[in-house]
Picture 1 (tube, helix red, strand yellow):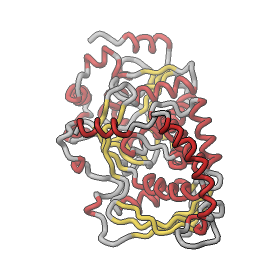
Picture 2 (spheres, helix red, strand yellow; picture 1 turned 180 degrees about the horizontal axis):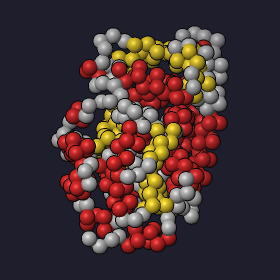
Picture 3 (cartoon, helix red, strand yellow; picture 1 turned 135 degrees about the vertical axis):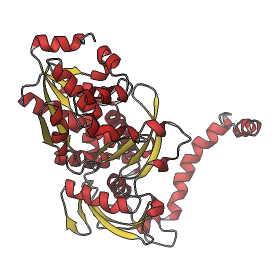
Picture 4 (cartoon, one colour; picture 1 turned 180 degrees about the vertical axis):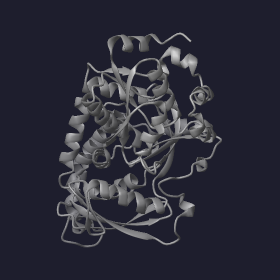
Length: 429
């Protein structure tokens, strides 16, 4: 088998390749292959609260048969803070996807890159394929965080793609080195999962068919609504400047809040969704997502925003929110426009203090009450349909007389044509 020209260059330059690993089939294959090719390698994995891992430190043992050392980098606090920011920005993507993967990538890339540099690495190797979003995210983040740091993508290396066109070839390769039996069960899974404390993204394999129900997914962070309890769970969430600081009266930090919300919302069937999302490279991808905690926090903070943001601030917030969501999805979290938009959102969130009580029942989060909102611009007397000391209905007469001038002018000028609109609709029907 001809050696990869890329690997030859790393050997010649004396580069140390830091490999991002999960302990799975791809990670083992790449680590072993590079090491046996004579490349200096060190392996790194991020602890971002993966709910599909009983113990993240097991990755060290899984990678050990490949003859490599693996360093676990604890990034749980960082990703919890990132989740809080995404919730405050309401930065969900197509289909209400809370971007657990997109958020996880910038936290992971930054944290692992810093650790790799401390351990003398000069190249970051990621396991993303040449078809998906993650290759763009990982490489852009490395590029912007350290333009001199190299990136190696094994699954875009022609030599490795020829040698390992599929999972069976990887399994055979590892089996020849006595370690294939440890992961043989992985080939039976009906979809792939990417997980962290923010949520899970399930995609590929059987899920690629739109004739496959999303319910083939076995939720790891909760349950399907039909399996949730038959009684309502009430939860109180206190927000300060757009951040949840207490649950049911107990003060908590971001990581504790996220864990508690994941548990409570998950067991009530909250936060399951699916979408045909628009990928960075222009294709569409089907995903089934779990994000119970972020969905719960997102619904709750929305009620506070509704009370404290005026009409134009709400419109601005929505524009900024969409921009932040797109930027996170596209791997542009550290870009100037992203940081500016997030900064503006945090400013808009400054008055977002309040206590939201919700009722959780079989996948739904019902509004129960909103209290202790010192900056609320909702006043019952102003909006009451009954007689009140608020807005005087008589005063609306002048406003409507002024606004009628424009309406009548447009009509006189022939700019209003409702008949043709209805005619087109009738013809289409």
